[in-house]
Image (cartoon, rainbow, N blue to C red; front, side, top):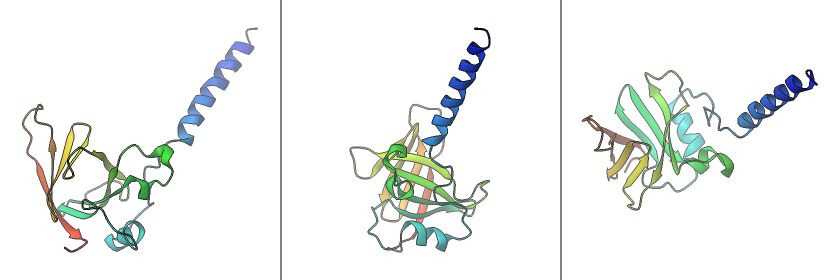
Length: 149
């Protein structure tokens, strides 16, 4: 009896650990990347893009690709958001990794992920910031570099 309980507990722990990793989304949905062109080829070529999709630049330290979650993760079981922001270049530790996920709100120009909001100000300007009920933090503006519009 004393031997069965630890074995049963160990078996249950292994099942829980393995089942969590089987359905977890990969940290890098497009694998390692080496160039912006590689991201464009993998995520955007040959299809019509939503207005928010593309390559966006804040500065040389933050370049992201915004893509439909369904393009990065075709398996519906692991799609938590409508869109993902993927690290393209800059001072990131993990190029190609998911930086943020967000969902469209009732307004076509507004998106939300946790406490972060994204506002499509124009075809080529995107604002990211923290919800207003949090301590004052400046918003950041991104400029679209792909597709050129």
